[in-house]
Each structure stands twice: as structure tokens, then as C-alpha cells.
Image (tube, rainbow, N blue to C red):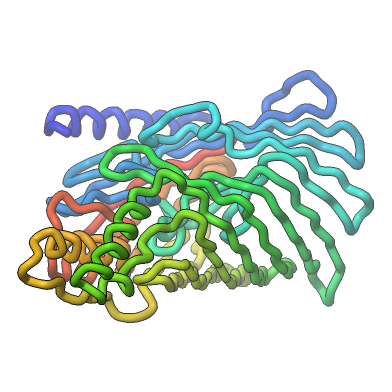
Length: 419
């Protein structure tokens, strides 16, 4: 991005922010004039500054990433939700999210479209494109107004981009103590979009299923979830690379067979997560922890977590957040290939680069504040300082690979609104 274009984006962003802060927003659904039909929306106008000359910052691996300087696309989005209530038992919900991504399509924009049937006050079933429950914030992941921070913690939310699945979900609600316990099971299939050097790619999860428990009252929210999915990626280029390693093991490099296993096609991914939130006496505490297990030869286990603490002072809520995303275990070192076979040397070099590319070790400290301008508009500012250990930038892409620890800062300003 040129300096002129960057300054123009900054100017336009501040003009829009100023306009939003002066508009008399009211937190009401649009009046459709049709009984049972409601239309609501939300959006975020964001601006970030990345001080790194090498790191391409992004909130999710679905995004392309933004280099040094200002960017107004990474944090911005616009959403629209349409609900129709047929009767007391049946309703329909659909949601569209417009966000900057490498590939724009109707399928990517349609985040949910499902029917919910309530058998009674306890049992309900959802059918269609449903929100993926892997995160505590899954149902409002794109609604900036619903969260405390300018953006979700990247170390936790940035590694998985699939926000919905096509299938079914059965839920049961039970009054337990002074709260409600919700048990749910679901199954279906989903797409996992990601960006690689500006090119939109995706893999399929089919089947994708899991189960979860959620207990909630006016102060606490506790949840535990398990899910697993079989990865369908028939175009995975790593399959041919694995074949080459197996062949090399038969002709002069026996250790190569133990390296093979980079391909993710037809393998299982397992995910376990737990989370809690606390909201009482103006204190806001939220935390989540997850472990991912993959069926690959290197770096097959990952853990991520975050802790956020904030306190309300009237309309202003300052907060801090710490997060971590790491591979469980040390970085893999690929055994050397026979020095006299050049092609095996190249295989070894590619294997080491691939191993480095899926290694994760990053930590972030964020400090910010939220100002509730009105019942429908909030203004937030946040500073994030991220430490990426040697080869530990699984989420962020680099212009040039750096083989040492690097630190960078991101400053973000957002205006979130609902209507």
C-alpha cells in the first residue's frame, strides 16, 4: 500500500468514525411491517497500525494480512441478520457478514441460515447452516459491539477460521441451581477457509461433530466442549511430498520414512476447549483454553489460551488481555539427508521449512478501553504487543523468514454499532 493511499484510508476512517459518533442510533430492529419478521444489523469501522516491517498482521488465518502502516480493512465488517418467527415452536434465522477476505462469494458471506424447532421448553433442534460452537463467542463472533475488545484474541481465535457448519444440532435445557445447563450434540460438514500468500484456499471438514455443556446464570458462564472432524483435502500438495519421502527411505535415506506424514488429507482433527466468564460488581473476567490434536508427523498438538480482565467506570471500561498460542513440544529438527544425494538434500530442506511453518509459539499482551457512547455505539482503543519466538509465527505470515525472536506492536481503534 502506498503512503498516499494509506493516508487517504486513514482520513476516510476518521471521517466515518466522527459521523457515527454524532448519529442518533437507536437499538431497535428495522420495522419491516410484516408480523414475525425482524431485521437487525451490526458493523465495525476499524483502523489499525502495524509497526512491523516484516510481519503481515491479521486477526484470522482467513485474512490476507496487513503490512507496516495503517489499514482500515482488517478490523472492519458489516453484518445483517434476518429472523422470522412462524409460531411459538418454529423460527428461521439467517445472517450475512461482509468482511475483507481474499475471495468474496455468496457462500462465504452467508454465515448462517437455519430453522429452529422447539419441542418444548427443554428440547430444541436446529437444521441448516449453524454457528460453529467451538468458541465461547461463536454466536456473535463478528459482532464487535458484543465484545469488550477491539478484536478477538488472535492467539486463540485466529488459528481456526470455520465459523459455521451445514448440519443439525440437538439441545437440551435444564434448570440447575440458580442457572441453566444446556447440553448439545451436533453433526454436519463445514469448510475451513484460509489465506496463503494472498491466495484464498479451503479444506473441508466432513464429518464434523461434537458435544458441549454450558451452564449460565446472571454472573457466571461455564462451558466445556469436544469436537472432531475428518479433513478432506484431496488437492493437498503434501501428499506427493510424503510419497517422495517414502521412496527416499527405500533408496539411501532410511530415516525419511519417519518424516513422512505432512499430508492432512483423510486425517482427524480433535479439539477440546473450556471457558468461563464472570460479570458482577462492574468486574468483567473471561478466559478460554483449548487443545488441538492433529494426525501429522510433526507438531501434532497445539494449545492456546487467554485471560481478560476489565472494570467498568460508568460508560468507560479499561481492560487488559494476555494470550498464548504454542505447539506442545519443542520445534522438530529434521534428520540430515545423505550429503552425496542432492535431491535428498532438497527434500530435507523442504521438510524442515514445512515443519517450521506449522510451528507455533506466540504471546500477546493487550491493553485497551471501551467507551459506550450510547446504547448502540461503542468506541474502543487497544494496544497489542506480540512476542513471536523463533519460527513461531503459525498465524502471521512474514515477508522474509526470520530465524530469531521478533516483537511487534499493533494499535487498533474501532467504532462498533448495532441497529
